[in-house]
Image 1 (cartoon, protein in one colour):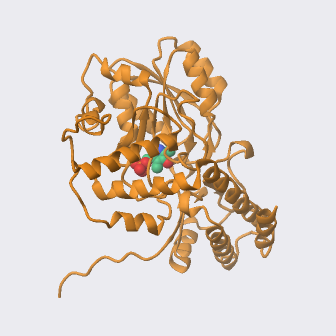
Image 2 (image 1 turned 180 degrees about the vertical axis):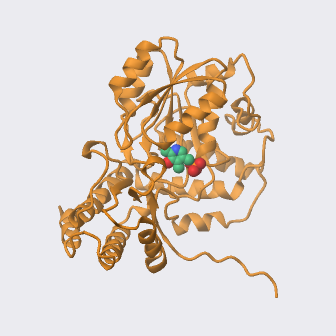
Image 3 (image 1 turned 120 degrees about the horizontal axis):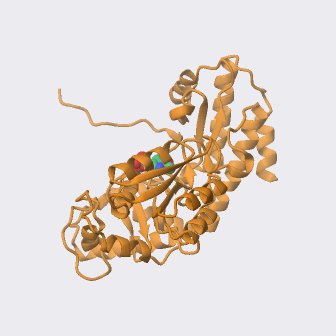
Length: 393
Ligand SMILES: *Cc1c(COP(=O)(O)O)cnc(C)c1O
């Protein structure tokens, strides 16, 4: 008896990522593999760069996907921009700011932390105070969309502050890109990284990044070599570089890039503004259902991300049991709490292709069924009506 092929069940993905991948994207991925220096492939790479410039709203020449997940995009920003001894102001209001600190320190830099409560946005006043107290700081780093809590920080204001104090900026837009406005050029962001498996609804494993001219200058004029060979942009540029000749650096994940191309074509055809509006609208509908049931958001209303909804788990409810029943009985995945919020919240994602009316109806219906069956203290039989009002309202 031979081994069997692996056939995953069909799930609805409403956690913190990956999100549902559109069948068009999966189909694109199964097209024939060609060489990574094939002229036809190189042409497609150029299109991917152009489409990413659109998604990031930038003309930055150095805009491309890193051949690894969002964490590698994060690492590429830090290892390239932080030189030993550089002071970096890092904002932390959830899990991912903590990873930025790790990256700064492993790159030989000194992290100055600006802390905000988990569930709140980064406070610009604290950032300004830190910039004033550290006139030798070189970089400000923060997370626009904190996936661990569902809070959104004001990138425009934070980047303005950084500019005023002559700092470069590193912005985590892994969950933000495609779901909520990002304007790299208008906001003068210097280095930004994202991921493919959140609001782009592509398969996981690639990390779109973009670097400004100011960032590029710093990278080209480093005194020390970038500590990571694979992520050294001076070398990566030889392959993804502007137009001219391509040299082998690593074998690009060819089929994954077909998928990204398709995801970006879909985003372009929908239109960024429409995608942002869809995420906003669907958040309102989900929120109406959750709140009618009596569940409460942990993030203040004006700081909520539409694509990541964190709600408190009702008193006495078994977190893991609810999530496993949703998975086993409804093929529905929602996210658990991360870090300090483990066991305290559920994180319901409405990212990319997952941000659809039918997903919301399934999620609210399944959650109500499971919580009712477990005698949880929720309001029964009112969520659907509340959502219908939100849909037509
Ligand atoms: C998901 C995520 C990451 C990490 O991306 P991976 O693809 O899992 O490596 C980084 N930052 C934020 C804000 C994220 O949501």
